[in-house]
Image (cartoon, rainbow, N blue to C red; front, side, top):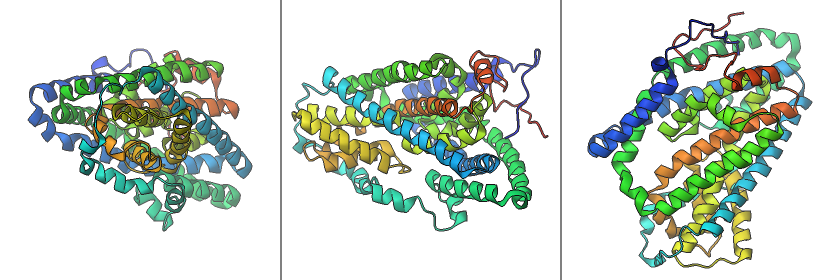
Length: 444
């Protein structure tokens, strides 16, 4: 990936032309429209969905090119395996801790206590679609789905894990090929520049997508939906905030950087995630910003895409918190042993559901199906507010993967500390908006 020249004095993008300001304004307008004209807000759903589809259109080539070029540049299979091993060790420990945090908070706050809901009165048909998909959230299904039918189908099938597998194998093959693979590698490097220019064009539509998605959410579900189950929503948001600022903050501090500075650096991407309820919407931009902040291309290319499937801190907090909420709301007392069993099942299902669309709700369904103490029909209790919690899940997942990438890069001695300090200090070597209209690339 080519280097983006630093912004010079006098050429800074005006605040009203920045992605940060435009997305923030779009979110505010979307909320207002959803409140005062809900029918129109619901009708704008295609704007949000269309933008997400545009982003997903470029995710596969971005991941493939970044990983392939990065690994080919390393040229050592052992080093690639070492990075992957460290990344997966981090993912397992931190994401499992997120499950534990959700369980502890649910026991302390008791957000579902006192609701006294009879499970027999719940609408099981409302969650039928999710329970039918829950069988996909299994280790066996994951192992089968990660292998594409062909090399090309990996790039067209929409599975991040399949793209990741093909990219890693291609990068290793190029590295082994040596000089004979150089011509093909140069083609991929040129293609990478073109694809990121395409990303810049697609992201110009980000404010429109955020506006449509937020207007639809508020227009369809209404603020009243939040009030009716406000205890769960408030608990989930507070728990996720605690996890980001305290848990991830401690990890960041131990590795020499500030979580608040990283949040400021990624503020435009975070707003985009908030507006669209999808962390995938900011994946290409996250990869480029982390590289600009001093993380080696090879580490970014491996850690970020795998993290999007295996390091879902927000989703894990949601799973245990929501499961215990349903138990509390339906008057089911779970022993410590049953809660630990639930935690163990969630650890497996949360990893096995990597790449499953709507993984948060589906993996929760899969977990409850395996733990008979809590009724699966209880999902109907949170179906109406799930959309509001999806924003928080996506934001937490996003920050978790950003922190993971910097940490693994540091462990690998593949982190330019000066570049990181400059980026998080506001004097970043890339533009504050990597997708700004005036973005130019080094063509060396």
